[in-house]
Length: 472
Image (tube, rainbow, N blue to C red):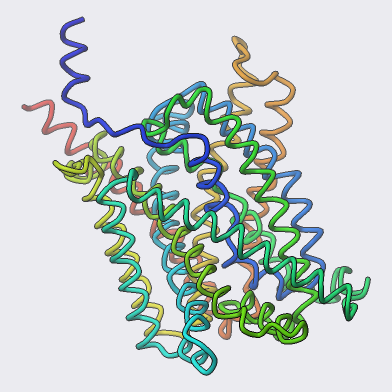
């Protein structure tokens, strides 16, 4: 008993600072990402059916999986911990690795989207700055530095940018949909039933399904910070339910508004939301509202970046403690008690990826390439998550914890099939891609590279660390 207590005392301890309100706002800011909407809405009204299908077949099972697995395996690590407990150490490491490295791709897309929106807050005439590589790169670096500093200071401080981002998301989405409703009531719309039908060439639409599934992830984020939630057994289920309902409603409403305001041919993947607000505000007679809207949306995007940067950095933190990655990644700040080493590494790699893509392509194509690879890496842990539900439910000694065996089987099967489909369709290029060969090399090469690196750290580096420990 004394030895166990001694071991627990030597483990790093994180502060429990997240309440239910914090979690609901975290889910909204993490799940409801306005930055993916323009690239989806650019494919027309057919994406509404994709949204509805994904909400039923992917999002609902995700909520069940998060609540069930978080109660069976509480603690820091989330998708890493769950796959490790159900499938073994390597699968846990691969799940966590893909979740982390996906965010190395995704955080840069958030930074680029911040640049595309924030220029509207500077006033009319500054919109073209978003396509200036030097300006975009400088703005990305400054925002990344601010987010890293706030998250190192701690979730007690860093959570406020998440919360402000969540509030900004609500206000921005509410304003967008309110303008859309006013325009529709006063002027009608050019959108017809034909726009909601499957196009003759659905190639570009296929990529949208993977991006939609990607846009609906995030309910698992709080479980990765399980040791930092106040009373997680009681707090998490209600927060997941409220966050899921609000995010789903906001996604469908905002997509419809975009389609009403801007034709799909004119939607920019970086500035589509502000484009829609600008056009609707001019028609209604309130053009002054664009700058404050862009400022609110910028806060929302900063909150998204903070939520994913801070949350995903807990994966290498836990992997460092398990000795599958360098031990120093499991270090916590002596004053702020945060995983500062993992945060700095994440920020450094994200910056390198932004720089690399800027050299080879334009700003909008860089955004789409990074987003598509992030989709593949992000959804791999969900294969494990839904597979874990099926394995637990089909076990001979199954004991219900939160949900029945039938519900777990239905959720696991639906989520697993939908996730696999989303991964496969992400390899179809979006309409912003100019070179098919370059895109496929980027997608296949990037996927295999990151999976290969996971195998190296686990089987080579991890085995070496185990041998050193045994010798010691």
